[in-house]
Image 1 (cartoon, rainbow, N blue to C red):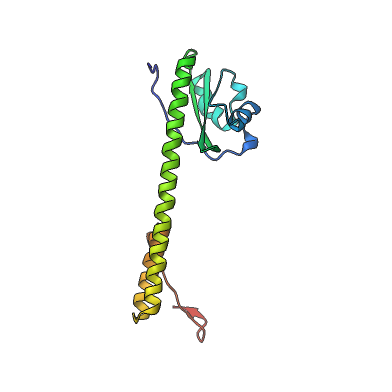
Image 2 (cartoon, rainbow, N blue to C red):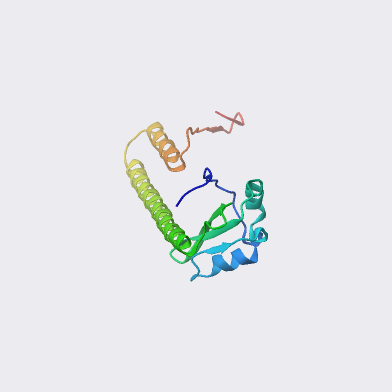
Length: 169
């Protein structure tokens, strides 16, 4: 496959289903449809059209990204080459889209598993701290460090409220 122009990959903001054209809505809702090639710019969602209009793209392909049968998103390909999405190339992109879907789903499942394992470890450690004789400061340090790890925070703070002075310390 020869690429006549420099390819560009752009992550577009969140799409609401209502922002998609009827052609795309139908293609993405159909569990049997693996792609939707088209040539009319009227089917291109506004957010995407703003990015491709200056490039004079004429051929488009939408590939659903699914987690099993559930729609998670879509891949939108566009080019100025009118012959870019022939039947054999569309089949190639469909297989590529399915492979990308599997990679995304595997990555999401791995992240969920890692997060769950991390939460279980923290819960077990907190139970040990609660039942142990560690000083309050050590318990707090552990809790704050665990919170940073789970949330991916760079910093945490603990402020104690002084009821007599009506202020945080």
